Image (cartoon, rainbow, N blue to C red; front, side):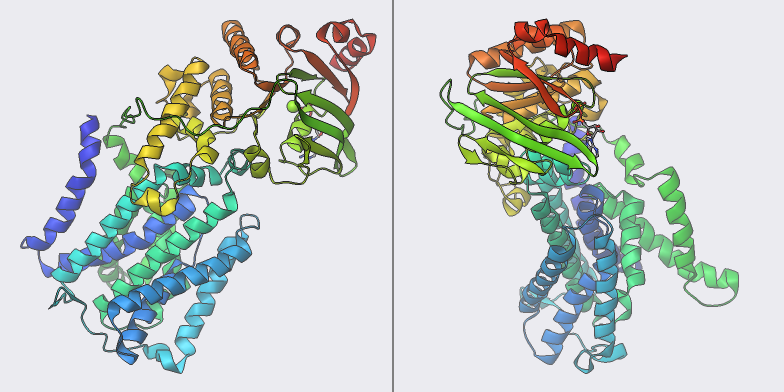
Length: 589
Ligand code: ADP
Ligand code: MG
């Protein structure tokens, strides 16, 4: 059954390309070209909107950049179409970098607004510049020549469009299944987690935005040689919305959704353009209204798009276990036992009027297991967030092996060897357990976007997966590595987070309530793992409510209450302290 999935792509490619050689009516070849062109743009939206959660209404403008560059350079300056392709891509990259750099650091809705503004501005420019022919555009684009023959606007061009579209799909599918791909998949819901694993989420947002712009520009370049003329109307905001519709209808987080959406929209659009004016007895773009209604229905009843139904027909293939014997990932030099590691110096965090953490100090030496306990709301998780750079300090300082790290972004702190889990599990539910854990190896690997798209990253992937499996085996979860993380119960999800944190090769591990939701046996197994880590020289800071668990495991305990440090001592001292008892009894009542 898994073979069905492995051969799905080659079979689809063969069918799509083979169409050009069969006696298919020209009408369908033309439709096929449109579908390929739409799919190229929609592929970019799959990455951008579906996977990374960034919405763009302005893709049509990037298509316009590719098309106008082709027409202007080839018709007006008699340059080679292939040079025009490079220039078009360069312009799209430049525009995307500028737009992205301005908007992608801001929260969610600035990007869609910026893409609308960009779409309108570009369309206005195209329609008003004399050199670009204003509303008439540029006429007389020649046929594209390849290997000394004209491709025409039929079968030859069809073949080129589909070779490019299929290559792009292959690259995008490769990308999603790679080190940068896992980072991109973490951007949508898991920025905090991804940053804590060392990922610059801003960088990957920019990468997908640029990639989507390039795919759109390539589609536009092909479009110019297909239409043999360019004018502003196919690059309007309305068209930008239609591209988004194609992606959403097809299934915005699946590469194949782009093709399905493109096919359905193109064919239905064509039928409606004939049917609707007859029905209403007048001409007009009625199909836009129908698409609007359909979009609302799809978003309500099939928010994952049509591909979520079609995709179910194909079995999910487990990742082939091909990493046996892969060389280990690079590991960091570990601090010597007893070396001062972490100094938390009077850290404070204020949320408006609330002081969640109030001048808390404590130290951790290499090899220590320190417990951080206190009633709910005492400020333990906030302290974790201050140490790991998830939250900024209101006052105080954190030192790591002597270096002040307060104010560094959390990915920089991760790079120095501090890793963590989260009280509320943060993961990518639609990725497998193994892939989630492999994200922890991000900083120990280096494959970039291009390498991944071209599938030149397999050696390193083997090393990453070998490490991920090793860490999963360590916490007793290797047999569940192919399950989707979102399908696990809370306890195993917490264990998976620990494996992911271990995958970063940390010198200090911060665990926020690791035993919550675990059954008794699982707790014992976890305690064994933590003891083993200690024996290996790992340092641990542990928030936990289960007193038996904490008392049996830690060397020292810091007790917090209402944001302040109540006391610090050995488990025995803490247990004997009347203040600690009072704090717990006082709030539990
Ligand atoms: P603990 O982990 O010890 O249970 P927390 O550190 O989560 O406690 O929370 C400490 C206090 O800070 C609580 O009163 C909580 O409501 C508040 N708090 C935590 N995070 C935020 C935030 N992002 N914004 C405002 N208040 C917060
Ligand atoms: Mg907490």
